[in-house]
Length: 94
Image (cartoon, rainbow, N blue to C red):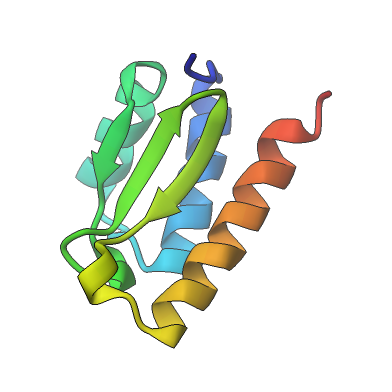
């Protein structure tokens, strides 16, 4: 089950990816993410998490991860912060 959001909300999600995980702040990347938001299950954004930096929308959750072999203490802290912010974001209306 995927979470469905408005374009404005997908912009807020992308803000989290940019601020916490270093996703590219290029208008094309943001527009593509926002316009595809409700269809996304997996989105590779790379950022500070490296090539395996991914955003997920599945199982009723929004979260990020990276390749296990790329994990560092800094990346794991960023993942934890992003996932906490994403959970607060999509749970705020419940």
